[in-house]
Length: 463
Image (tube, rainbow, N blue to C red; front, side, top):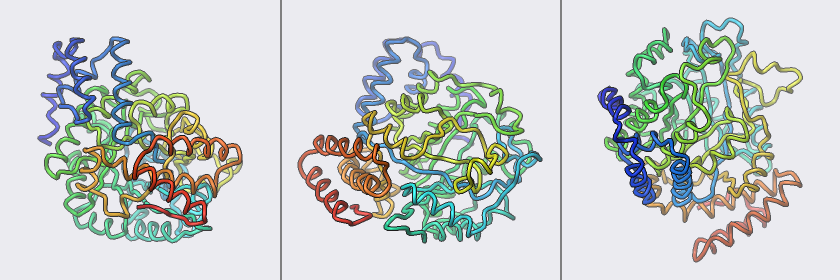
């Protein structure tokens, strides 16, 4: 665990010189170049308390995000295939000792039904999520689930990228997972603070800190070149967690030339019979949470920052402007919850944690447009071999914008035609025209031609 240097991180947190306003201003100025920050510089920005300086930090994070990714927000939905789990994490409803949780593992036919529901809503990306259980979530089962999801086609709509959040595997296991045609492999360390990690994971395979920490190394060595990391904020000091997670990102980039494709920032939420979830040991307030997102955007400007529906709509709207680039929408966090009517399902008895945003995909899409953000259903990079170090090259240079804008617009146009409500259609079509006018040269020409093809009846138009 040498790259998570706790002593060094704590020394940064105690360094009074990193609280000097002039230093913080200089670092914000440097961050505008969108070339990233050091751990020390990131620590200084996490120490900002001055109201005016915070506003400058937030504005700069918005600038940098737009410089790399434009106004786009990529949308996806999680699909939980099983809540069976052999671990005993103190913050999770799926924990083994929770006898009140209703356990369910979806059959392949049920997975098909859940996927059909999501396709009919307009989704193109799914995050497959499974509790850790060799009996209920074997690689054979995961592979069959993924194959089934990809096979669902309804009137031109289908799932075009499946990212996966499952327990850490061996290198051979990751090679098998890669063979299923996955997009990003996602795994959260939960907390990078070793002592806290041991307390939160008293037994089960997950208690092995190092095995989880080096999961991304094994995935990359197995050929999965898009990986996503994350921490569960609220288990320990958020400043330590942010710096430790950045240490992880820097280490991957230095060793493999591939930093994390995504970073997720979930906050601890109440969960059924999860001892620490109702009173987080280190609760993170909204302002501190906004600071986390902004600093991550400036420290690793190339990465996608994922925001889940744990957060309530009002806060999600604010965070869109601070560097978030991917969001879940219309989410459920229990197996089978998409097709079950809310009247017949007490979801709290099966879900992993409570949600803060219960809006439908259509409502979120409409809201994004009204806020000036372009909803994107694009999956082009993965299918055009723009992954791993190739994606990093485009993202770090900012040239990814020239590819993403036309792809985002064409996939959004597809959503508008096939799935949007009448109320959303009017707002969205006006918004697309405004977004096209922002483009120029070949990028604008390409976008217009792709949209025309979608209008003419083509689907899955991308380059």
